[in-house]
Length: 332
Image (cartoon, rainbow, N blue to C red; front, side, top):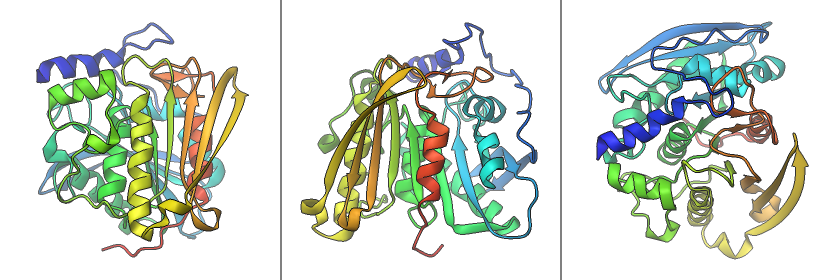
């Protein structure tokens, strides 16, 4: 059954927008026009090793800057994801570092993060530990504002971003998920296929023992309502999971949570945005549903795979959401 899910994820390498295959080993050109430097590095730890690319904005003065961790989807790599999302160009404009960890082909031949395996659901283990280690390494080696570190991803990368936000709440100030799935919604390849196909009821998720259910990390979620790869209801499950964790963190604030609904149109596509707020109007979650969009990064560019040029610009909206938030806990 593992091969079945890997075949499903590797099929994402076929871009629905260009019709061209992005086979394993395909080397996308380095993003151009962003300014700054885009360098390749490697991280080694007891849990294993990961290659990554780091975008360093130009014109630095030594002032600590924000850091965004971007996790690619299946069949993608760091260069491809950077091109499709256009995040480096935005990071140059707003002076942010961006790191793109790259899944090892030896860990998953379709280049997917193993979000569905129980061994990668917990703090201090597997891929979450490796990605957190890369994040801490960059914080130690560069002028990073530790209160403004964020994680986002697409598809399998979105699911892993959710895992990171929930297992390392002292490290990340906010989470962005595009077309992903909730933490703990699957524990093996069979349940992953079921979650992707039909979605999961948030109340039915068995939370990993070492994951905290008490966190105030906010989340912004995007999903196309025509996504045939990951059922759109998975995004609602993510939102409910974060709302429940927030309520547990602030103790009985559930009664004070409110939600507003906005309908609009951007980039040629209609969207609906739900904003969930707690006390004093603090935003806990934003949920964007993109009408007519499939399994692709909304408002992306044709330079990368799985990017829909139509619709609201998910990169811009995520960055806006991120930069309005700072982490209040200390690194441990």
